[in-house]
Length: 186
Image (spheres, helix red, strand yellow):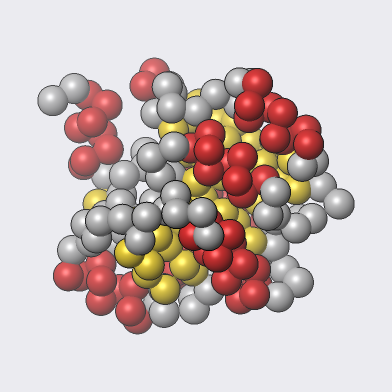
């Protein structure tokens, strides 16, 4: 197993595996705090460890979706306690992402929402989400350095068209994992 995968598989939060590198979790926590995020829509649950952090920061206001449920029994219990809404469905069914974002926005009221794009097609997720965000809402993309390129024409075009400003592009050490965060301008 290469060093990159070993780092991802060994990192735990609240005793549960998290598929992001530790610095990404740190930056997401900072973003939630600094921007007073009230709700999260997570596109791609994975094993659900990061969802626990989102649930601790926004209890009762997190919705997550994945086609396959890979959560442990303990994570399922934590999600239940934190009132995380878990949807098991095809993220790319045409109404799914709009529905998830709408539910998070309803939970947040007038306050900002974070949409975390971490499914199987991150550029597509960001392009879809860009049209749905309200001023002040955020979109974050976690990537392994080869899935998502902020300067790609389709991504840059969507950001320009929908007034998304990149507020963070943090490359994580030598593995080149990147967390990119955008804010919808008014």
